[in-house]
Image (cartoon, rainbow, N blue to C red; front, side, top):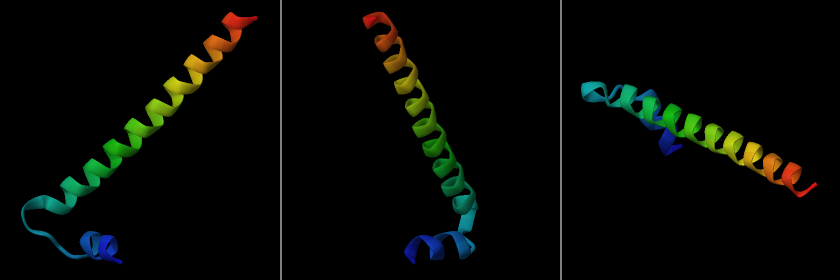
Amino acid sequence: MILLDVFISPLAGGAQTFLVIVCVLIGLGAGITAIDTRSSLNKKKKADH
């Protein structure tokens, strides 16, 4: 519930917006990493054949 409190409560100096941006960037980074991993694995499988 601490995370919910952080997002619900109005924080000073745009810290709430900063946290949201950080979470989005982490999510995008994880997604891009997953896509890169899949594509590299697919290339390795094709090279083996």
